[in-house]
Image (tube, rainbow, N blue to C red; front, side, top):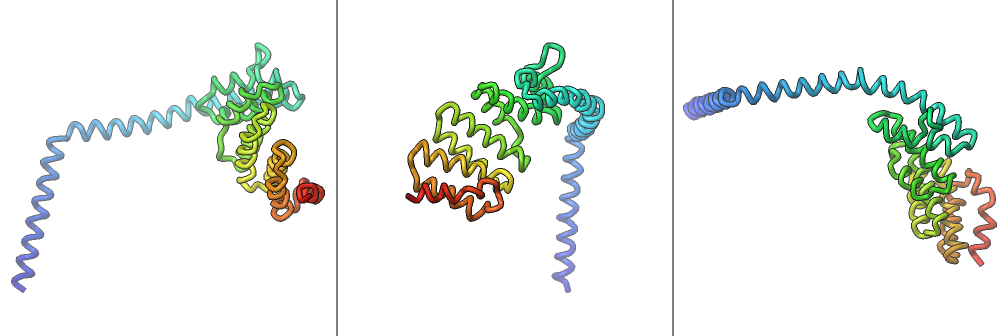
Length: 225
């Protein structure tokens, strides 16, 4: 019982010392603490105001510009969609001028597609690499586009690397396409039928509902010879 009382008094003493040290620390650093709190509040307010009065209007403004680009892209007017017409902004200008908006990613994707179709493969690769990789559909599409660019540049191994990346997303709509492209490069460019067969067989086994699976048997037969 006596030990319990002593222990209780000891704990009270320790608690008192801790509180005293805390009070002393607060008194010594009072100004710094207040300034820190003020800075935090200011940052929160700045973020709110920026979002409300800068980013939201900017997003609305650029949305109209993107519509013009998309219309030209749909008409295969790739040069106009990419570079604009002197009055309307193209994807390239939108990307550089609206970097802190949601439109930045869409502009990068559009610019990559346009540059590829214009034969500007290095530019297309650059934009495709800048595009956001969070989208389950756009991410493999952009990696696949980079692969297509490397094919056009004659860099077969780099092309296969990006087709592999694109296929790795296991996207039912896209993966088989990129597996087929990689398999064809092994088969017809690198003359490695054994490696090509692995890709073709994967399409048959895992993506049997894809368009590529419809005629994959003849490629499997060809690679098996």
